[in-house]
Length: 448
Image (tube, rainbow, N blue to C red; front, side, top):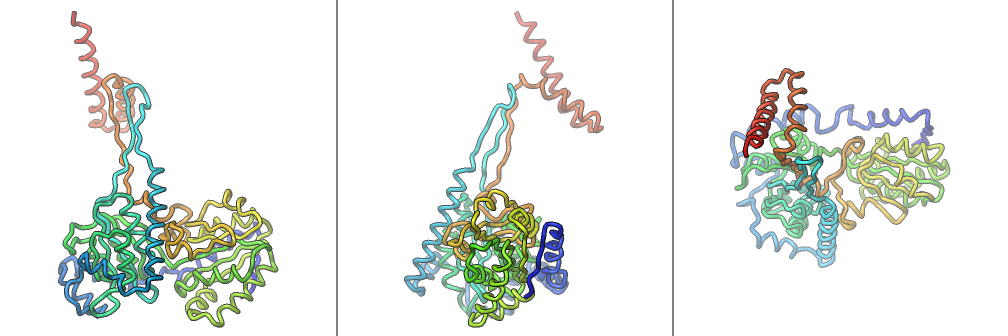
């Protein structure tokens, strides 16, 4: 890879980088074949019900077992086959993720206030009632997915959370994935994968009413299914390939920077990895170090392809330029390893999650061990939205309570606006209250 120098006057180059990072100009989940296949599957499952779900599981996943649901005892015992060390790690991740979600929850407050005499307004946080979580278990089973989706939803107070994860054998799913779901407090768990899992949860084919919201990552087909089902059910976000970016200066260790870039490139061959640095020497050293580390990396075919096709290194003239460039990139994960990390934390505005200092790494969050959520916006989505959190499972429902005495401070204004808009029915609702208020006031005065 050659060093690509980018200065303030060339910030627009980052936009071109983002455009080229799309697969053939079209995200994988929007390829015509994917769209057509998912559409056909959803239609078939909606018409055929659970039998169609079972048939797709048999044909696509090789499912030959009986009931796809794990009863509570079977779910609990999924941890029995795991090593004590892995069980302890999963238990720590589940506990820390729910702890962080609980801290977030305590800062979301119901309130009501009188904004003017006789007018009380406010909101109450009400949890979504039914959530379906998809837990991937393909080449890389993401064990912390349940912490981020099931566990956070339960912390928010969601009464019913079900989870689906694909079979990894003809009769079972991945035990570590399901044990993570158990630790996260899942209410019901099913060995169903892919589009059929999303459809079954959305259409209410698993012994529950249709879910109100679907969450969790998946492959291109799963992501496209979420897109097509959006509107029928709520969604967390439509995440694309995992991304990492690093801001570093001459105080950073190129070995650490290279390792952290490859740590996310390992997710898939289309995973972007970007370095923005104010040091030419560091940039050159990191490029060389990535090549060195790839030599004996067991996943070099994946991480190497991602780095070759979607890796970028930008040289910025100063910290302000580095901030400007990174806010254009708006990465999913952003590490900062500099002599002045506080400056970047105060000035950066577009990222999914921020990792400060050389002792931080994205993998800590990926595996659920810091407790922060790893379901984050990709593809520049961090410019306008944040990642999954306890707040996403809560609806801030507003209310207002109006006293009769406030009528003349409200109704005439609404009547005037409605008249201009030619919305007579709206105007009447206000005018009727004006008349009632005046009649009530007159009758009160007439009383001795």
